[in-house]
Image (cartoon, rainbow, N blue to C red; front, side, top):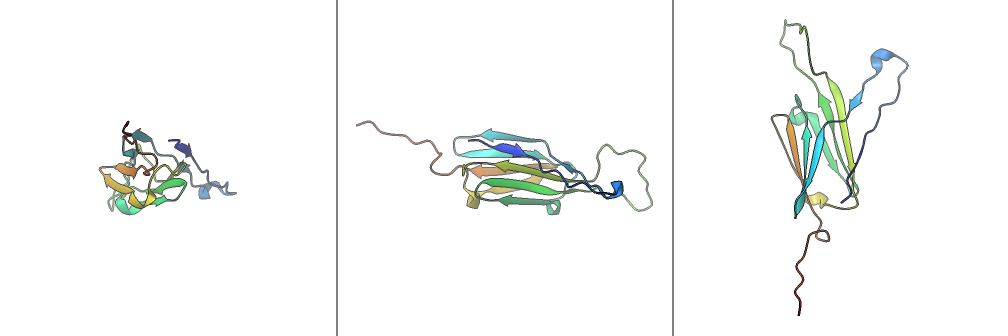
Length: 127
């Protein structure tokens, strides 16, 4: 399978204060006999902050990470920042989009992409 990662860049803005960067999350794709497993690291992202779109030739994971600060507290230092993220993976109809399953737990998004029947290995009996 050919999964190609592409990152879309936001359009430039005239005001620097309006510029919102889009980051590409860290991800890993593993192939099994019957499916591909996509793992995307999304620390600080809630389930309602993720949108997954599966189409015939692409899979798009996008959303926003935003940290909630308790009322009356001002952070002195933060290692992470609020940002939009987007990951686009293109494929050649390598998985069945109707059977895609996703789970987000502890900042790790796991997506199972079942292979189409045409890509699954088959045993051929010799006569």
